[in-house]
Image: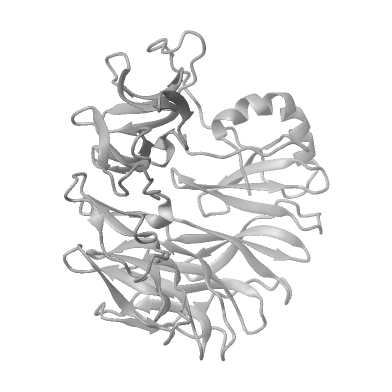
Length: 458
């Protein structure tokens, strides 16, 4: 589901405020419109006319005390550094066209992926293509104001195809862990401390030229845990070794080549949880044992070989929340806490046997979630501190239609933002909650029948 950018809401709402209020006032029990927080309009000044014909700075990021962005200029893409007390300066150039045998040739996937940069202290790692070495790992260092390729992982002009997605990167002790290929093997786990010698592969887990499918990188203790695939064991749980220069298998949960396919590695209350499948219990919730020497099964929530299929694992201040199937094949809110290996379902309100859990997010120690039933989809919260559940908002109390309701991934200032669409009117609503009924409100109704935008923390 897509959402709105709050900074664009005011301009969008101006023409619709009266319509929205009339629509809201006709609905019994709906929270009143809440004014958006005050915004101070800051003065803006042009820092530098980079391209007098047409300037389109892209991928702005902050590193250290500076801001960095990309700018297309002719056939080049330049990386600029902007200080608070001076004009931007170009620190690297990525050509889109190079000369090959005296003839111009377009660079395949040119430029730099600054928007996916991984920031480690005063450094930012990103994927760049200088037109000669292909797509490799680059780094900009705000302490020196310079940018350079860290290492040509796949030499000879071929690309290492470095991946810096959230699930394929982690940072531990100022070292970046990521995936790439050197051309001789598939995608494997690499590490980099920002130097050429300190950037290397941690081993060929798959043992062939095929990918090890490294993913779900998660820092726990002084190790990086992740999932990877080997022909003999299938996809299982791995971790970096004690020295951080190699990897080791944690446990072959599903013996043989099938693999348990661990997923959603999540740290909560000092415990590493994940879901995995096993031939006798199906896919259930597991955890790393207290000695970190192996793994152990939590409660088999859906008894027998049927899977409870835990998804949407989230930490709420030491309580792990997740969505899982019960013995009736209905999704409910499950929790796990502390060092106890037991898991359980939260007592849900009586909304009928077909009521099921939808979206789930944490606000402090509370688990905010949606519950859908024949009466519609409404907003609820589980308070871990008191082990109680209550309704936060009945957005459309007179409606029996299924409401489209979902969360953003944005929790800021202790508030979770959510969005909803009324099928009857096509009005789109933006709301926020701090996990209490009194702190839950609709901010406005916008863009009836229009295209949804993107809510971003900007």
